[in-house]
Length: 151
Image (cartoon, rainbow, N blue to C red):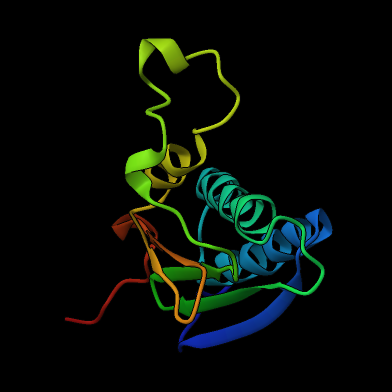
């Protein structure tokens, strides 16, 4: 299996359904394999993508059939970039409860951002114009997995 030798981008608009979560995961994992990520990295990427997509579908778009989730998957030699954007009202990170605080340890919600940040090398979110939230996640291929460069 050869590593990705040039950059590729896939863009898709997905419905605000849980089926779209599976669709997005499949597209991202296909690109991750082509870049050369191992199974552990693929599992981490999968968790982060699923969390971001569920947030976009459920919290951002609130399952609204008129709203879509915009997915961009960029494969670069040695790097995967995933952007998930919803059309919801956006959110203020300061209002998200800390899932590690003792009073929140048993709560089911609030872990998504923590997991995305833990599983990816970079994870940022921003307001989307004219409305919504954009989450951008980056996973770098470990140096030992990258093809040897000619010196």
